[in-house]
Image (cartoon, rainbow, N blue to C red; front, side, top):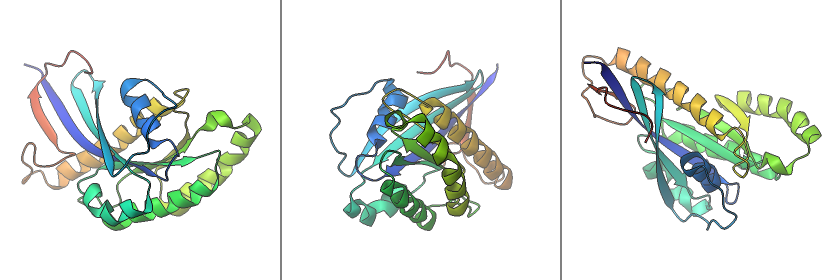
Length: 212
């Protein structure tokens, strides 16, 4: 019988209020967009299943963390066991990029991989549909430097409204988390138990017909 590996990862989605975090999550999970989302209070959750290949299923727990300042007082609790993050800013509202640096610093201070390294975090320049192409082109070098400076593992221009690069960003983050998970399994192969914690690989009969 073919064996299918089933991975579970907790992914944080953080950033300031109204940068489009909830829109990014719902575009990814439901392939939809609405102008009428209410501001998240505390944390919302969504589940996404990805058929990475015929024998590998990846389940994502997306934690949509509220952007209010008071939420950061509880962030250590919310961040626990996370294996990846999407840090969102509003590309049409440049000051939110400064806040993205603070969110990344908060992540690095409060959650890490088993190896002690920071969890992989992608920067999403959301609402790019509101920008002129020349402004988007001019933004790229700045974001390259910003990501190097603050330790992001990459960045994407995204539009939750139009669906631009939402799946691409998610796919890259999954690949980064899978790499980190494989490294962790190699380092801890004598002590890992199936289902021990998020990010571990659980071997099971390959019975998945596709993403659900």
